[in-house]
Image 1: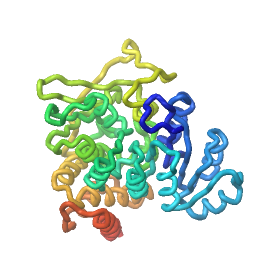
Image 2 (image 1 turned 45 degrees about the vertical axis):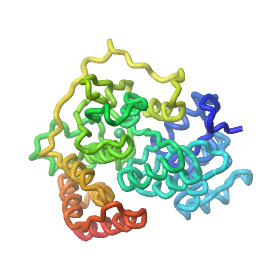
Image 3 (image 1 turned 135 degrees about the horizontal axis):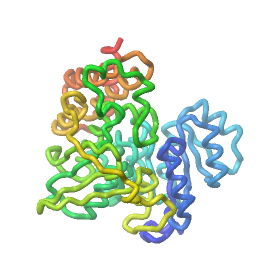
Image 4 (image 1 turned 180 degrees about the horizontal axis):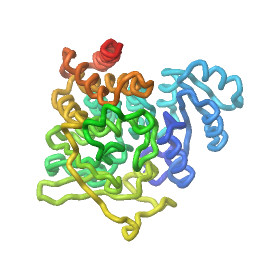
Length: 390
Ligand code: MG
C-alpha cells in the first residue's frame, strides 16, 4: 500500500527531470532513505544513456523521455518490462501514475507546468524545484492545490528554508521573508566590466553546482528575482514583504522575520539533498548521511545589500511580482531567450536585463489570466525577445 496519508510510510515518488542536478540529488536521497522514499517513475529530456543507468539502478518501471527522437530510440532498447512514454503527454502520464504519492518537478524551463497541474488534478502532492511553475502560474497552481487539498512543497533551497522557518504560521505573523543570494560570480565586479563578461566566467558559480540556465540566472540575479515571485505565491505574502540579502557563503539558506522582530534562519552545508529530503519526509525529520555543518570550520558568514542598480533583475522581478497578471510569465520567457542567446555568444551579459525589460515594457498585461492566457503570453514574449535580438 502506498499510504498517502501515512507520513511514516515510504513515499512513492515520480521525478520529472531525473538526469538534471536536482534529479540526481533526489535519487541519492531515495538511496539514502529507502524506508521513506522510493521511486516509481523517472523522466528526462533527452539524456537516454543516463536515464538507462538510473532505470537499472532504481528498478523503476515507468519512464519518459521528452525528446521524441531520443524516446523512440530508448523504447527500442529498453527492457520490455519498462513502460516508456514520450513528450509532454508522457510527462503527464508519469505525473498522474496511480501508484505515485508525490511528483517532484525538476524540469528546466516551462515544460513542467502542465504536468504539475495534472499531478494536482490527480490528487498528488507536488514538490517543486522548477521555479517557472510558480513564477508563471503561481495563482493558478496554488488555487488548484487548495481546491484538491494537495500540498505544494518547495524544493528550491531558499523556499525550503522559509518553509522550515514558518512551520504553518499565519502569513499575518510574518513581517518579511528574507531570501539569501550568493551574489553569483560577479558580486564584486565593477559595473563597467559587466559588459565584457564571458560565458565561461558566468558559468563558474562560487558555491552551487547546477545546470547552465540557473547558473547564468544566478550571475544576473534573475534567479533571485524569480525566487522572489515564487515566494510570493508559495507563502501568500505580497511582494513588499519579500526581501533579498546577499550572503556569499550560501550557508544560511533564507530567513523569516516575524512581526515581533525575531528572525528564524535555516542553515546547512550547500547540498540540495537537504531540501529534497525535507520535502519528502515533511512534517518529520529523519536522520541521514549528509555532511553536517561544522561552525568551527566556517571562517565567517557575511551579508551585504544587493547591487540593485548594477543588477536590475531584482527590480524587474519586484515590478513583475507586484503587477502580476501575465507579466511574471513574460519576464521569465524573455529571460530564457536572452540567456540562450548569451550562452550562444550572440548577446552580451549586460544585455540580458535589457532584453527582459524591453519585452516587459511591450506587454499588454492581462490581470488574473487563465492558463491559456499565461501560455500565450509566454509564447508572445519568446517571439518578441527573439525579434529584439535579431
Ligand atoms: Mg534557489
